[in-house]
Image 1 (cartoon, rainbow, N blue to C red):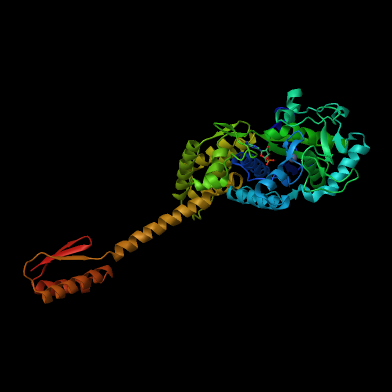
Image 2: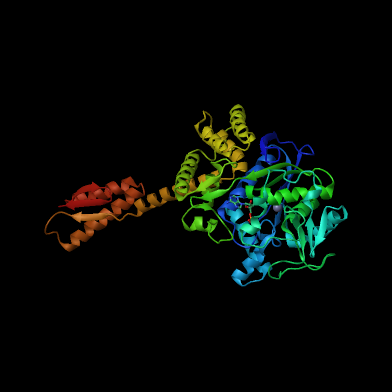
Length: 493
Ligand code: AMP
Ligand code: ZN
């Protein structure tokens, strides 16, 4: 499989440290607010990546952190702690906020068919591991203490800017945000490993450490959680493109300084989802959520398809019109699948199966071309083969795409069948309208004739044609002339 690697800036053949196994790390959400659908674009694409790696036969071990401490409003270690900001906004404790938004994140993942990694670690549960890593960095001379905080000394590295060259402008993010620059740093690119003195309000969550009571920097959490759970050699690390600098750059600096060797070989970054007014921002509170999509009547899986239709390395602009047309496409696809014999037990055409599966794999092997992988589903529907083969292929592709295609098709089929049954029942229960077109027929005769006509209709419905004919004969003998129509009978005498 060829997969773009932000580290080498090329589409590399994806090779793991240990053949057949893959260690995968994902930067998890900062749980001070709901995830926006931009964040979830990253998680959808990372989910597809994990599932495809498994599809190719790799045994994937995946770990994700939950950032519940240390992420400041500027990624460059300045500003207010995001968790504290969320807690103040909602007048709750940081841990209450963390639990609430972690649960909300997992609920959103469930709706989008995003598999939750088997190892999920909240940063606050790993404080001793962070302290051990920071101590080792100090012992090895990669870190220093200044004004009570512990900093990573980037001047100790041969190369700090591993992803891209950066200038002072990038490092002055905090200054741009209107926050004072941290003058305790020896180099502009140094970053905090452990805070004891913050330049802003006191922290709610604090722990004892060899350097005083305080709390960890944001970047250390991913390095420590990854090394602890996935070992010294990481095959792939994922995140949104904004994570590349400074977060991932700092993760590489501290992990490799700690381990004494190269750490992660492949870096997978998802470009942003934007709106036509620009970037979505969790901190400003102006963003789109899964609940909002649902309120507007969209199945979250339509958003998943919306994401899959474009390449992860291109920015994607969200629009409601785009969602509308994706919904139309999704429904058409599901309806076409529903028109297949879903319970076809005939043997699968193995040759055709292999040929169409190859098309899907070729698309995914080509730097995760999900748009082309989706068109492979249409190729299956158009193919000259039996329904059993088509269904087996769609089931196979959907282990990766996770669009719930067969489930949705079964639902469509079930509701079409229920509708047809309801129509038949309605027709069955339709009341018979009986009209007399003659003048002056007395009430007793009318009642008698109507009763016979009703009994005749019931006999016909019960397919008891002998009785129906006998009743007709009786009516004829009374001088009644019948005129049958759908759901009505008119008579005269
Ligand atoms: P956060 O909760 O802010 O820590 O971000 C969670 C994940 O979402 C990270 O991997 C970010 O890089 C990613 N992310 C943030 N904004 C966007 C966006 N607009 N589009 C795609 N991914 C994003
Ligand atoms: Zn991270």
